[in-house]
Image 1 (cartoon, helix red, strand yellow):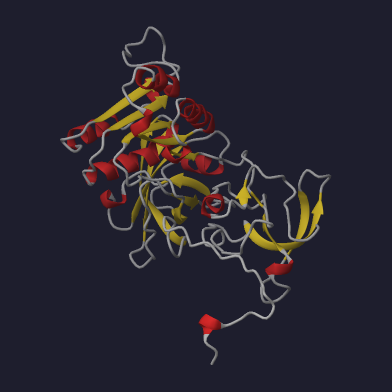
Image 2 (cartoon, one colour):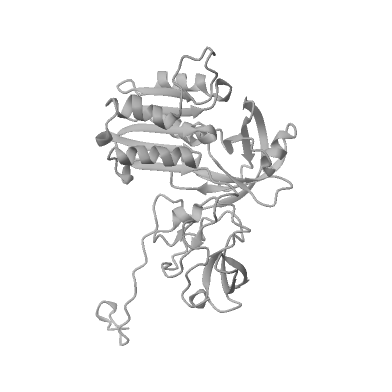
Length: 373
């Protein structure tokens, strides 16, 4: 047998080295389990806490604080993405907690609001995403809006349970007092936080009536953080790590504020809540190295497929394509990875998983392929 160390390639191929898998993405990335809604309670007039219990022999999701899962309910063709709302070490065995805000016209929202769904069977898939607590000792600046409370709550619960040695400011943006929840739980975290450090919860209301009894801060949460904490030097961009979760406009504004103040992108993490109105990601196959990271995190079977024979609709996107069946038709080297926007649930797990920036919602709707479409 030839000595592999001295083997000479007669064709002198230059093969690009495949990237190492991202250690922050779970191996055997996504499990799909059946479960039952074991409890359901209102947190506000439009937000529920929903607990899903899976059977004891189901493969564990092993989700981390900050990650998310998808939930599919009866009658809905596609699942929706929701962040885990509790630190995994505080969950009961086989239970997963979510905060779900009702959205007008949403399939899952309408189903949930139609009565007590306790005992109903659902499908849960996860974990997905890389959002979560880092290993530094920098001050945590957490900013959430709406049901973005879920992922941030899980992160601060995890930090508190592990008595991390960091200060934390948690800013929560809501419209009115009626939209606030977990106030008592935040006070408990403040009392239980590492005694040598501090935790502060700051709710900010943007639409509270002027003559109400609210004596806390008002306005947009990101602007309150800027004026009262960043501009006044309460926090310093040389020693903070920012965590955003919630509506895209809030996150975009907050990121812009911190970037303008000189904070590095490496010190900013965020989890935007996308929905069916968001653009589906597009695969640039000229950047793809066939590492399969994206295929290992897809939560539904047909969102990311191998395809060929694309038909372009006036340059605005792909109107039709032929799906390739591996081992039955030609292989991927002659075809393309393709995200079917009619099947995509906008979870963006593939975007986060790709180590070569080959998948993005910002790419042209007609994907780049290895051969002409």
